[in-house]
Length: 300
Image 1: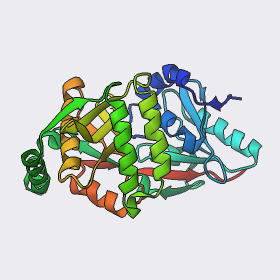
Image 2 (image 1 turned 135 degrees about the horizontal axis):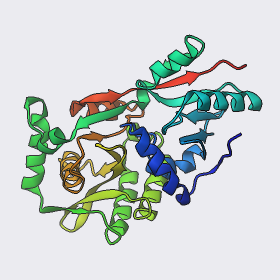
Image 3 (image 1 turned 90 degrees about the horizontal axis):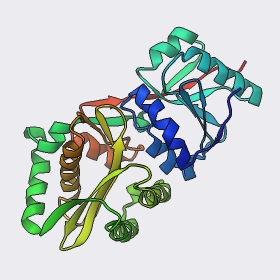
Image 4 (image 1 turned 180 degrees about the vertical axis):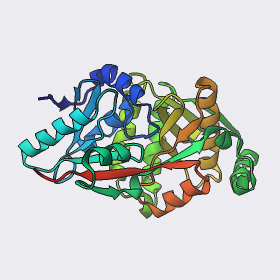
């Protein structure tokens, strides 16, 4: 039987190669998201062979993330199901992508319940399009950026240890002014961002800051999640500064493409079911969605 333990920074050394072997554009699997959100999801991690096992316990019944990695997955799923049966609950898998579903159905047929979790689908964008913002459908984004550039003395710079204190102050002010639609789960996100600041270098994160008159008005943080996909974990800007959001988006993508020239796609993660966030992410016309499903196996 496999062993599980609370996630720590030390787990990054063995989890990273497993995630890279999966090579999925999904934002669920990279170590950054596992570690940064642990205060919310209370995860335990372990491995079976060359696959990552992550048990999450923030709901009434625990569930597992899809066991990413390489090697035979059928035996791993059988072991997870035996574990769940032994604990007295049905096996529930979350973060199951559309790429995984054929395997699930080949192994179990109609013996498990599959539910699409639309609020958790990731938005995947062509990196070059976010860089250039060409095309009629992104005309509005270019207009907001032009206005920002005309109205402000600005600069973009990589996030560093020296700029983190200023970004923390900005985040605190942002928290005071966020709208009602943004407030759902905001305390959890705040803790996750603070963890990102505290362990920025140890986690190997990349970040950028948009400055106006030597004060940050926006920042963004993320990491590589597959061979050609960069995952933007957090993006915060003052809504009162016209064009700050599209500006940090464009400048950060340009920076990421410069330091990671292999990047073809930007994963801007899910919309959490927030109407305004969904509208915003759809307005950038995603290249495709990373669909995610919940799979419930019948209790033996």
